[in-house]
Length: 202
Image (cartoon, rainbow, N blue to C red; front, side, top):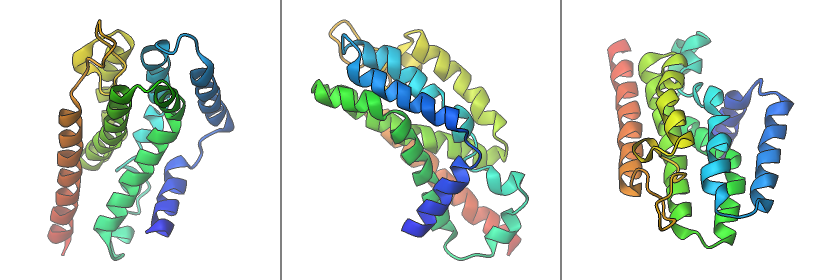
């Protein structure tokens, strides 16, 4: 599984320029030293989790867009490959948002961390679902537009990362149970759709 995951990470990140990683490093460092700490979830987490959108949108699409889907379909353990692809997206999400997560941990913002984890589970699941069903990266990028707008403009119903806070300082966005359940359902649909496609080719 570790080799498969490493391979999926390399495929997902292929062609990512160094300046993109420099931006991740800058946002991480700024998140660790920003004053006051309360600005981190609402001001620094959204851009940290907006920048990976073009990379997230590759999930579920690269095999089709590169014309190797039929070739890879002949290899064993297709479900394991799908899970590894999702895990690669999760790792990307975690790395991109590591700075805000570490700062929330340092400030004992437990509820913020819970929303962060749920958001990190939700995003790659959504990207993988839309990429698998549409076989193009454009659909996820389009769906992300209102989510990005909501996170940047304090719209709680569109907030999946815990960026929008209420008067008491607690996350006011989508409940963690909704995010986790949504991630689980989307991943299950991806696995089921893969099984259906393989059965129709058999």
